[in-house]
Image (cartoon, rainbow, N blue to C red; front, side):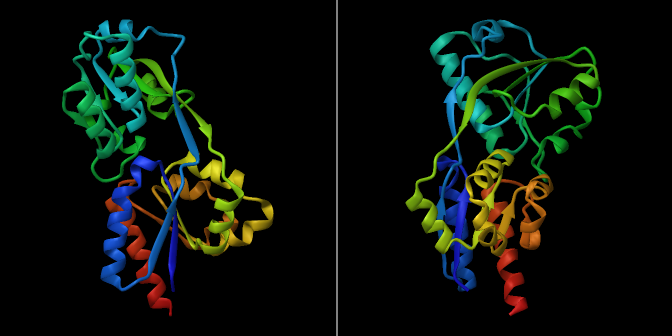
Length: 261
């Protein structure tokens, strides 16, 4: 069986996972090709509720940047709008190692993140996050981001402030691009709910059989549950959205297929 994967990931998150997948394919003797597409376009957003300089001058007990994009746009806005003001001295957190590395470069401090399951639920299981009463938390995110961490920290007694530094829009797909997918793709990799939602919205109802014939590699059980039941015949859940975890999950999928032949 030839494999052509569609990687629904931002352009800057494709190179490493493609490299690891190619290595696994070569070791397995599998013919693998891939395409990539980010279904989300990202733009800087000026949060009307806050002055960035004011945010940087405040005292924070802890902070979370929810993604690499959050770290990137936070850093860019700090450079443009608040030059010379140092980053807050606080405990910094991330949901996974990729975003943790990006955040550490921005704040110049260690960043803590879960090491097994890279998601908000695992972060909230940290012992030091069980009692945050009276602590001031800064959450840097995209406009209208997920609220689980903020809601949980608030319920535990923290004072949470959002700073929204970027906004998302749905990307367009050319007819040529789509037809290539339709005729060649038999595996789909998706690591965010937003990418999944925009992709499913862009596929005509008449092509549901194509999606149902594909196998899926997703980054979490939460994402799996967001896939319509008609498409869930062949879904593999990776341990996280990291390139290594995606490559591991893909290899597991290929080995399962070989056993069925």
